[in-house]
Amino acid sequence: MIDVKGKWCLITGGCRGVGRLTAIEMAKLGANIILQGRDKAHAEPVLAEIKKLGVEGRAVGCNLENESEIDAALAEIDSWGGVQ
Image (tube, rainbow, N blue to C red):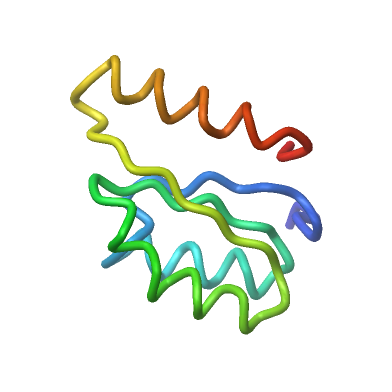
């Protein structure tokens, strides 16, 4: 297994279902998590769970079918700086 402790992991569809479970499992391994979902507000409960595990968590909202929304989400992530 690759050591992900302290690394940032982008989880698409991370607000529910398999994406949510993946985000939580990666957080248990020590990865900081960026959740992507169509509605950024849906990420709040998952972010709360992740932060209880002692890692950082952030969220971006975008529809992955819309290229301009993807570009905006990536620009937002870039603006955070230090998220690698």
